[in-house]
Amino acid sequence: GGRLALVGREAKLLRGLVVCCEVIVYITAIAYLGVGEPIWGNPNSLGAVIGVVFVPILLWGMIVAESPSQRYRRMAALFISGVLLYVSVSRASMLAAATAVFVLCVTLRMQRLLVKGAFAVALFLAFSAVVDPSHFASFTSSLTSQILYKGKDEEGLLGSRLSPWQETIAVIKERPYFGSGFGTSYMGEFASRGTLSLAPSAGGLYTKEGTNREHGNSYLALAEYVGIIGLIPFGFLLFLTIRMIYRVCLKLRRTNNPYIGAAPLAAVLLAGLVHAFFEDWLFAVGYYLCVFFWTVAFWTCDLISTSETAPVRSSLSVRSPSIAATADVFSNR
Image (cartoon, rainbow, N blue to C red; front, side, top):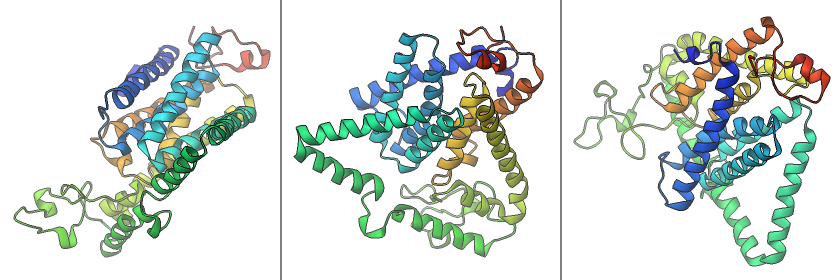
């Protein structure tokens, strides 16, 4: 059903998607930095939506901006997204956003943009260290402890993930072929904790909140749910998704054309697949990011097909004749 939003209105939908991301970023910034209202729930959810959705789309929107004012506005929204990403203290989200930014810039041959961004960050940090050395030292200490080690320095870099990974792998080894059932987790010692029945048959799972068990990896969670046999169709689905990302990146690299409409969507898919390696949401069908991710996957499939068969049409002011000759999908007028 989500695919119907794209049919015949590709350019309008993509422009609206960028504007929507801008508006939501400003609302999120006001909520978190202004009034202290966590509208996205826990910090991991904030980091997921910022790193997987907003950063890739806003970066692309900045690249294809039609005027300086529009570019600066989107650049400001992208900067605020970076601030919110830091506020979330989500390493997975930071890695996902960095991967999408790096791949998008490299495939579009915009390595200078990466260098400029790195230089701006280094300049800001150097300036901060000179102006207030004690505050900078406190900042770097907090950065190392809270982001890299999540407050678990003694357990190593992935200390917060090793425990749920090990629990999930143990269940996979116990039920390797058919798993524990889609969306259910084997509870082991937690199946009958207290007076409340937490048995999977009763719909009860376990986490720190007492309602579910964290897996720390969407792919491991899926392997626990459906087993090796059940992984076959899901594995094929992931293969097709990765193949679409590769095809879009290859086309961007060959044409050097940022106006291909599938570009930001492929960046979102790439960021999502990376982020899912550290969080459980990729196959959580009731989670908004899961719904958006797979809708974007179908949009990408449709845009790839359109870009290969539809005539070249673009209403954008493009300086480069080579780009104008290959610009497709972004505008349907």
